[in-house]
Image 1 (cartoon, rainbow, N blue to C red):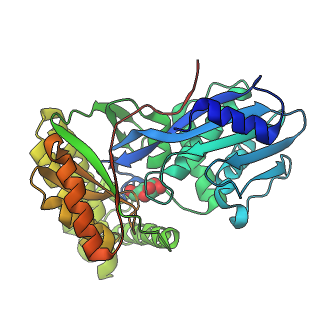
Image 2 (image 1 turned 90 degrees about the vertical axis):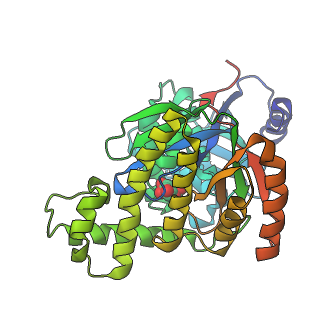
Length: 392
Ligand code: GLA
């Protein structure tokens, strides 16, 4: 994290005045342990908040304008009138805070005054670790608290997801915003994305560490491919209604029920997409059971099966993620490895024995470079808390 004093100095340099009245907030990134592309299908997911995230300094203004700046994007800063705020594609990273302000307005929360905001993010962008959800949630949380509200973390996640769907144009599910808002140190979150019932599950990995590998592959076209997958799932539901008229989500079917009805899906590609979703939902529940029993080998196998299904049935991995996951599985002491997040580039997560972590980073990094020409980054994941105010 940029040191707090450094951030405050930059805030004062940019916006003037002194330290008085500046408040600090922070939201984490997230890693999804298993349950990929299940959230918008009403299924379970199993993400955890990370210890790295986005810090936000905020101070009220005396007019009705919003100042936006980030240490990460010094060239992209701006000042906007609060009333009639427009969200535009060209807004760069500022699209996220602007979308959130529009969303609050939509929910009847009209800000009583303007604010200056300064962000600092430690989450690599476009890596599938939810840097955007982190910006959205920290912004919504900070503004609500500054306006005298007590944000409810579940509602916060729903509003930020809606902001991204409506104003950013990505039809994401609720997993990322939910994990960022509701994370708990050393716990993963088992969330049912239909009912939003959830529980924190102690992430007891014993002698094993969760290691995140960043392919550093830019996720071009990711948003349109993501929306396309979502549309394919919706088509599958429509076709399955011939046998199950009330069906709302693919996640309502067990693998057996799906097998009995899959002939109704005429399009072979759509059928494979749907099969991934149904089987992935079951893998999530089996993973939680395995983790709770301390059966890490079983959890690792389920991670592998998840990746293979995302590669072969859902087709969202690509050569970079596949090369990295394959290299990871060959390192002794690795129980499982899979892509995490939307896919099409981004990160893998692997379950690695603590004594094998250095070797893992060396060998996977080398083999990945050989296969793709790209240099990977690795982070040993520590699981942290959800959004909060700093310095209380
Ligand atoms: C992205 C989306 C999530 C989820 C994952 C895939 O991270 O924002 O809602 O759909 O992809 O599991």
